[in-house]
Length: 299
Image 1 (cartoon, rainbow, N blue to C red):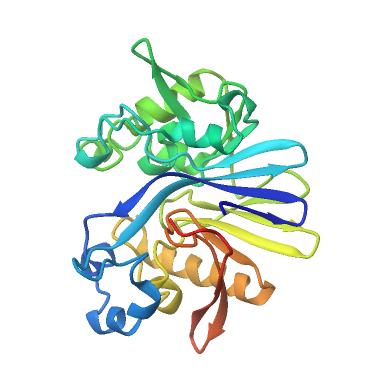
Image 2 (cartoon, one colour):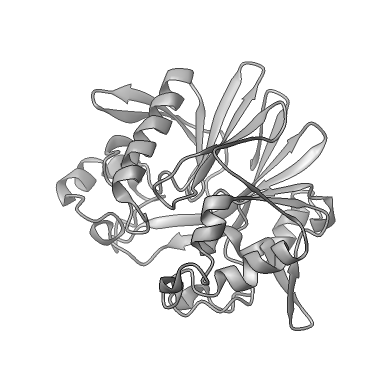
């Protein structure tokens, strides 16, 4: 099962790809002690940590929401035909993401809203597709919601250091064409999507990182973007990933989001969790614990 319903909102998980990210825990989460990973192995193996290779596992996926008559996509993965010099395994992909979307009942022209929780390369890739040598918006009828802070930060004109990093070319091929088409809406601090969905700033991973909170009837959830990349960070929330622009702020944000989720019994739905993809958390001392996993099939 790749679908679930929370209140009046239907949620569908659409995979782009999943598998090893090519990093051991000490590289992915700098400073995280081996003994802490060993203590959490029963919760991490095999969906989040390969027991044989010691490599971390992640998923690239989109969460499709049907809310108040509109189709909303949260994050758009890596994309096809993109040039990613710093991440060769993401360059020139020829995946069937659009086919997966269609099998989930979503044609690109049906999408009303695209939410990029932040503007890292693996969250914006399918914003555009290559047509006759040009990058054009994949979802031509959609408004793309992007954090203004990230839009300014990841623009190479403002931040030349992007050249040579993982985000090289992403602004030019996945962000600027959508903006040029007049489909981007930049927001700051908070943005109400509809009566069930609200965007909130959640900085640290990137300056403009955000989350989407869902409240419908008695159901609550938070689409957590890259606030966390592994269940390890539920049990050990002080460890940020190597991709966090501001690890200290990311740590504070993670504790705030997990604390809110535990207090409100909200489902936590991160961007990159393989396995069952989403979970409830509970307070456990100064950290948190996995309370239950969502009733979704494992990737």
